[in-house]
Amino acid sequence: QVQLVESGGGLVQAGGSLRLSCAASGLIFRIYRMAWYHQAPGKQRDLAAIAWSNGSTNYADSVKGRFTISRDNAKNTVYLQMNSLKPEDTAVYYCNALVKEWDMGEYDYWGQGTQVTVSS
Image 1 (spheres, rainbow, N blue to C red):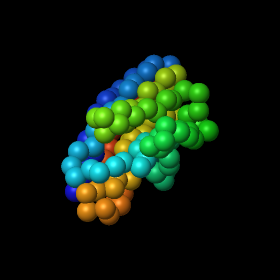
Image 2: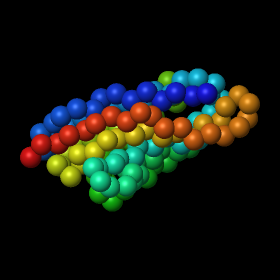
Image 3: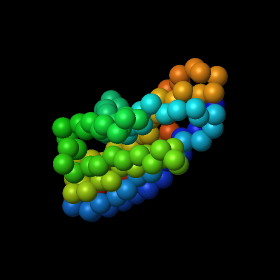
Image 4: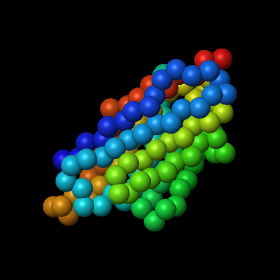
């Protein structure tokens, strides 16, 4: 079993910044990808940014140029630096990880979510 614990959400004014963190712990052999999804009220959960174990990253068009995803592999932690925040970024942000555990099985995990609210 693996747990993902998120932190860093909150209330910020438009144009401001927040940094989200997600730490994975448990029977981790390797983490293939770590990602952040966002889900606005009444909408589906969508990918915001993803970071692969080889260092490559991808972003949704809506956040490209404003958000930066990074990983600290030694700490099994992923970060999302969010700059130039807009009211439409308001959502619950979920951490996601594809993990290879010591039993050699591969499992997909989700964090509990952290609320980000951007006021205009």
